Image 1 (cartoon, one colour):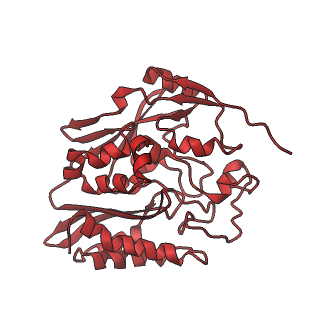
Image 2 (cartoon, one colour; image 1 turned 120 degrees about the vertical axis):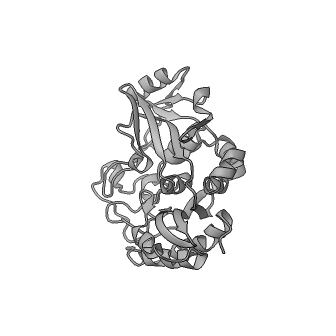
Length: 325
């Protein structure tokens, strides 16, 4: 039986206060509208009401602060990729923004939209397929595999988070600021995402009514090396490697490695981090570290290509980001 799709109500917010109030009432928050275009085609995911925050100029700034950089969530991916300050101080982040989607999409897609987008999952986005996020109780992927599927933590959900910015921002220790009718909340960026085996269907701050307004990055420390590389299918990242490591005398003393496109949330690669400690920093060492992480993956049949993509990204990430040989 066919179902009638009603057009959602559209509201253009004139202030952050108005936007947070409408979000509290259940409106979906949009800026560039890139992800919204796909969601409107899904009966079970199409919002009934929309509030557009694109006109809020205070959220489209790069603010230099004594302790770091505040990136407004309405900054576009193209603006982030081309910012001289970001290119100089956070080259891995500039690279992640420049590798996202296509040039036309980067002109309108925002930092907040990239972080808060819905998974590009065939179970979620195909009408009639059972999906845990639609109340089916569990993911019934039937062992099927696609390039947008997960390698890690597949038991509850087979989708992979497609953000290109989230892995590198988490590796850099970024913090998020969000506003709601209850006020301002500040949390580590990795807390935006549902815990493993959560039934939540999208990134969260404290409630779905929160509006992400700023991402705060501390200035890089002396001896800190950052890197990023990714592989894409179409305009979606399907395998990404991001990292921030502290190096002394070419030896890794501390490491934060985050993988993208391989799990329902950005994946903190603890096994890879442990393998890197005490090693000389070079592309081969990072490749071996990713291999150690892949050894714990519950990878389904047919996923070998994605594993190869991760290792290939590791080989090029350091050369692209910091020139380490």
